[in-house]
Image 1 (cartoon, rainbow, N blue to C red):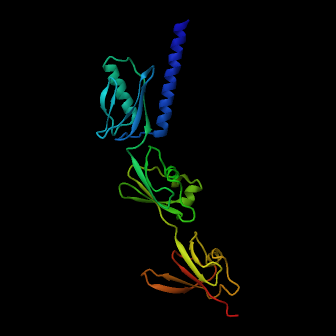
Image 2: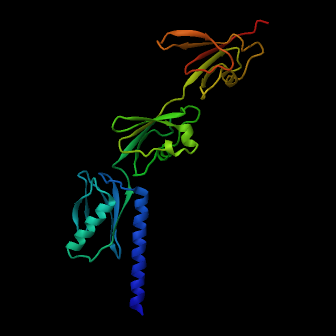
Image 3: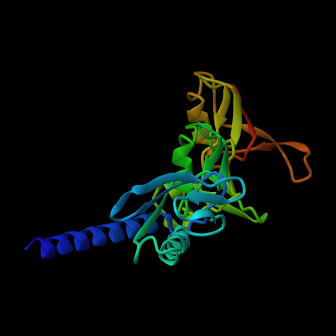
Length: 265
């Protein structure tokens, strides 16, 4: 009775190994190994062959009974197949079940720059998306970050990402990032308000912000202030500074200087 039980146990164990390997691949996709990555190699039924090995600068690993194996540019699935083949060809193990899991992703990186809590370079897994990298970078700086970000691809192409739509759950804005990409979150556009408002100063320019809303952001009118004859100083398409009369429903533009006048009576 022991032999059937042993066979069933080994079969269940084999299925578990396959399930773990498939689950890992579902998370990493076809991630290609590179120098600096740390991988855990194991063979089912041979716990003494489990080893954590790092890919060296030449793109290779050294593993028991296999020796040196070039892995850079190959997926974990390809490495599993190669190791299993070498163990079989060498007469060491018959039909080995090999698992290769990436435990540290260091070879492929992206940069997250601009108005985030922790700008810098971050290790990339195969399915890392914009939202994942923003989370690793500590999120955007509230009140300072713009509503849009720029995804600069390694090939030089650019994609504008609406952070507003991204945080609302729009999957189209949550692009998959690739090695060498840079995600840049700029500072939000600003406007300036002075004159007869409670709190003159510099403020974040919200989307479709009107003159009346800008005055409210500045604490509202003083007892002597009025929205009538309000003006905005801005630069035209040629960069020349102009003064424009505006009304409460008019929208402001980035870097506008809003002047609220005193009521005459």
